[in-house]
Length: 212
Ligand SMILES: C[S@@+](CC[C@H](N)C(=O)[O-])C[C@H]1O[C@@H](n2cnc3c(N)ncnc32)[C@H](O)[C@@H]1O
Image (cartoon, rainbow, N blue to C red; front, side, top):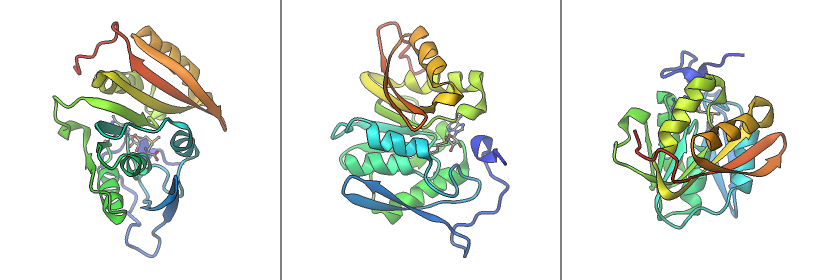
């Protein structure tokens, strides 16, 4: 299986969006049904990921407003959910994969969600702080890269902000929770469902919230 959707800025696989091979998925968010276009070279190209669905089904209702982040947005399932549940929030969807960034933007438009900004991580304004982060993080990029990525973005949480992460139990959710605790976050293992853990991560005074 090609893992290029985990690492690539510009996927080599030909895009299927807008072609006869285009795949779509329906995403149920409370009483609404959203439409998502999927694409080759973008994570979950054949259907919405099971872990993402566990996060969407189990995370607490987001605040009514604030600055939210979908870290590693892929085709945008998480960002679109946040934007639907909190229409007054400003939702930032970031991904290193340029095709994912563009796909999330077009999926937001398709669903008339004007409160999503989709962008590369390097384009996020340095001073921006987040009240909420939801992520199905790219575990497969490797432990040290993943730690660096989480440390960077969690340091951009406001002091009362929180992150909700969904992680496959077989891919190290429990050791990730232990590591996050060791760098100063309060971690609650809130849900264990279908082989996934949902972690709620909150800064304590020991955490480095300098945003780097
Ligand atoms: C497990 S996928 C989740 C995608 C999407 N949120 C979903 O639920 O379907 C992780 C995503 O993280 C992205 N990613 C990998 N490294 C990244 C980085 N350094 N910064 C931001 N996103 C990254 C990948 O391109 C991929 O889209």
